[in-house]
Image (cartoon, rainbow, N blue to C red):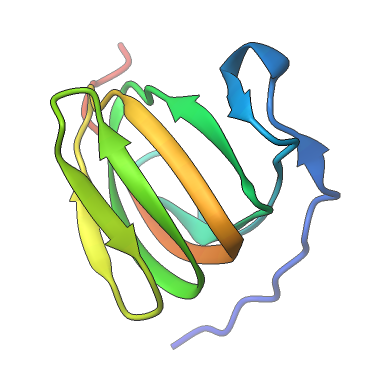
Length: 114
């Protein structure tokens, strides 16, 4: 068993072209960084912004905060402490953060780099 220290990055603004409401900022504390797995904590302040991650599946567990994650196909997940879900490669949607939110994440690549 290994305990890892979390070193938080400074808060940075979400790219303006992704923001649909407010002035959300995010920061990371990566705990495991490798070719086969990346995990850590992510924090975000209130606002709305688009998301379209590619190249990985992401297991997400909400630690604190409140919001909604909506997909372009109309599905949504209410975000609150204790909620866990899988965001699959190719997901397209929008985060709406109502209260500062913290998530634990584990990302696994879906493509192999030669």
